[in-house]
Length: 124
Image (cartoon, rainbow, N blue to C red; front, side, top):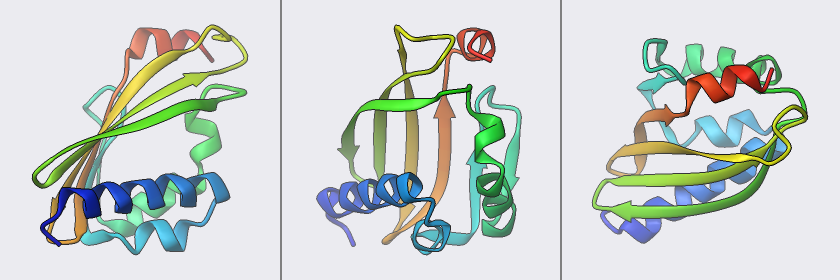
């Protein structure tokens, strides 16, 4: 797919799959050798098997009571950025984070999270 709208649709479908806990549907849109860069930018997972392992433990990686309160997409070429508004039990006023998705064809090759890590840590 070369249409950024299509890439945006793929990312949106992924967020919906995350909301349902449907890891099979989510992972189907990633290349087998994908790269996942977690908050802090030093923890990297290579490949869908490692990514799935992280998804299985997603609850431990999120602040207690984590909730996405808003979601929008910005796309350009082979990249889509999701801007998430979120709140949690200890950070009830909420905040924002960004997630970059890079595509090769119609598959996600990289997912990179951008988070205020000090605020994130304070929400646990």
